[in-house]
Image (tube, rainbow, N blue to C red; front, side, top):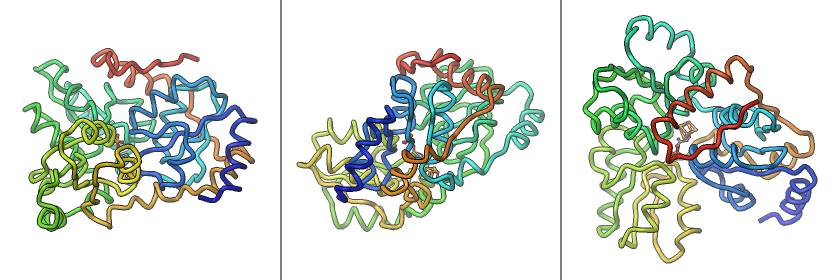
Length: 312
Ligand code: 13P
Ligand code: SF4
């Protein structure tokens, strides 16, 4: 680790009363300096509870926007303004409005990996860890529009048996993991359990032992009696898993599963972000008020998620 750079970051973090949040897909050196690492939901919870004045969000734009929605009184910084999520960008509010007008009675559930404007016109927000539970709890007579990830949507449809309209979005990084990769890894490590993210394509989902969000993978690997795991999601989580469970072995299913946007965050950019208070992520109050309602309705259905939503 670059200790002088790290020292400067940690020093400035204290002086700014900042907290550093890192998604499980962040580069190892970023995870190692973060106050909290976690999945989208876990980090949103931390963002809403922290007493810090500044949140440095080491992740992608929709995550920093979610933090800004939940913590409007805090300064939310994204160290690289170009760290977007191509999946989130696969749907716009105008496209969702058109789909809603075609199915006026349907409920709209949007994955947290979506722009704030899309959350603002959705009925419910969800994460990969609670999507099945949320949809299971919605009125049975209602059709459900699910955006933007067709693969998570299909998984939810299979698990719940609900009538769902799926937006054709996808994560290019998870698409790079192939069933052949899983089969090869299984031949090499016959005792290992395959843990895959529900953003993976149908062939991978079909042969995985468990479909889990990144946070659920971290939980499951700790509780399981198994010692070896093949990990079918973005590569960064292997660092979190090895760090938490040094006595267990984790094999990435594919070396190609690297999210270029997650990897845009570097230690230098984290330091510059704290030095220059850049890049400031804000959400227009009208959008924020409506987006927070979609998050709030998720919590009414799943109160155990215990997200302490802040008001203005
Ligand atoms: P989770 O951490 O919620 O599983 O999200 C996966 C993801 O792709 C975030 O970009
Ligand atoms: Fe978006 Fe996929 Fe990267 Fe997550 S891993 S930020 S869903 S492109």
